Length: 451
Image (cartoon, rainbow, N blue to C red; front, side):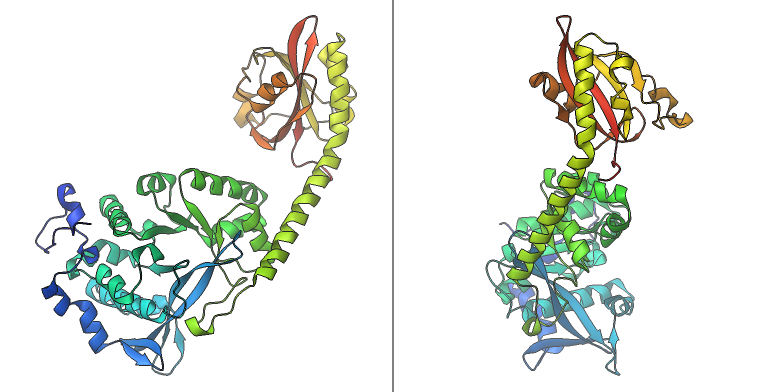
């Protein structure tokens, strides 16, 4: 790779030279190396304290801890996130936020951030392996303004004997407002050979537009999404869809902040790739780490499978009376009954909302037949959606699947219905009436009673 042009503070951050604005990733010249920040820190600040690298900043004692990130299908750590651990003069633990707040200036933040990365790469040696990643956080201010303080990162990786492909750079993108510099930072780390992870996605101003433009290798979902999913059924339904969208954008997905079995099971059910949190392992010094075993993951996956099977069985049992009554309804229609009479028995089944008929092109024939006991009173806000006679449902899976297998009842997954702006399940079956192909449909409330 050709080294980027050197940056001087007098250069303006124009669009035409943004790619020269991040020389911390450039390969330093011999002269720069002799007097580099890294050399100075290794000589002046970083100490070997009984085999562990430590440093001092503003009276705080600094060192590293690591938390495993587990592959949920691999059942083992695929990497470790490096975390700052600090104590004050009395030996009391202080938070990394407090330490960074003491930096006060951009120069101080760059100094502290780079010191942390030196510590983390040195203390990582007991864990380093070709099939494991080191996850390194880089302060957002450093991502944007670290370029003013000379090259650093490539030299750090060279000295630590880490290949760039073994390093995942974590960026808190929602704290960076300069879109151009953020995109260039991501490009530089990727061009160097590192992987890039967007951290805390779902918090602040995170959005999919940035994911598509930045094309990170990984996305770490903010813990708040897991908390919502745990307590909110709508959020729980959305979580697998969010993971699917990120997968379709080309990103691996990390669920962080997993604190107990219930959250671990949600991560598995959402099809996340990786998980991190106290449930699996607490952060510790490299030589002191303990974590969940492969057998513990086997037990967890057994529980997930049992839950899925139980949920599917309860859903099928609750749905079966509706399916039986719907099959009878379709037979009545095929025999020539009009829809209200054909649906009478169907409308006695719990959770049935409406029945309607589509022609062979997916166009609805007439209005809905509504179950007398169903609470389908339209909300005034959605009044424009209520009348569905003549609607074109040909793009819906329940129509396409029915016409491909006439005479067989089709059952959709739960979905958000445009008819009443609520979650529904639809049963459908293609029949023949007087020589014409029709598709009979029945909407059922979700979740079903008893499921």
